[in-house]
Image (cartoon, rainbow, N blue to C red; front, top):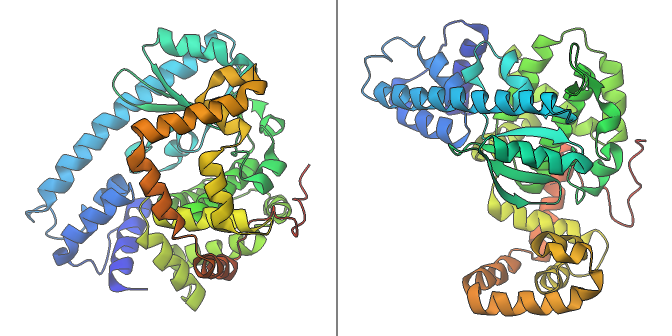
Length: 399
């Protein structure tokens, strides 16, 4: 590990264990600030820095404090909006299950250590009309629909994602295991409509979500810290079950590699070449990875069925699949026969109003070279990951 990586991890350990950090050079505060912003780790790193001698007197500390206070205000408003939505769903009899950060925040020593870019709630699609009515009544506005979620924002700009399923359907291997996810849900104690997963299934889902992000475009350290916090909060989990289910998801090797990296980060295990490689990757990304890497990963996914990834992507650019077109033109949900007409409508619209996007997409195709795809395949295999949905790959062994 680099000295900077050791500094950041020392601050995180201090914040999570409520101890004093060691080995932190105040000359690196500007770099730490930029890293905290990129990784959405401002709260945790600020708490760690408060234990560094001389930090509060340093000129850069004012920037940290101002940004941290901004996060506090954002966090309070976000949680207030989320509580109002969850309470309204319960009152209206809408089946729902909070996900990811909404569940994890309370496991940190302080809520503000774990920021959320958006709040995620799983609902049943057949109840969406009623859920949408509740959202509008609370002053929220609809943004767009994607493969796996309905995107909304509150009156003060907080993003709410109402999930149709736990994993996007285009992540075919993980989706085959989860489906919509409701088979794993049970009602919360004292609630009729709010649901939760067991700690074991929550951890498995969090790890699958992390793996999805890592292989699609990279992912930041916030999610790795979540695993460490979650394990400390649930020391008696049935790890045999966890590991058996991760094996069904073909994530066992990646899981072992990430867990060892965590032991290096927080438990003083000796670093290895692989743990240093994973650490470097995760430190180099923003919280949601890298766009250029996403282009290459798309090429790798397309190549799994054989043939040229570039040719397939170009075809998709001009003639998106039916499911994608339905999101763009909802009328197609009831009039599938009109798909060829709306392909033409879309082509004309892109030619008249979105030429810059077309040029950008064509430029992205250059990144889908066979060499880039081959190299990325090797990088994923090195850490224990792959896309398991090509013709040559077996389906996941989940139910």
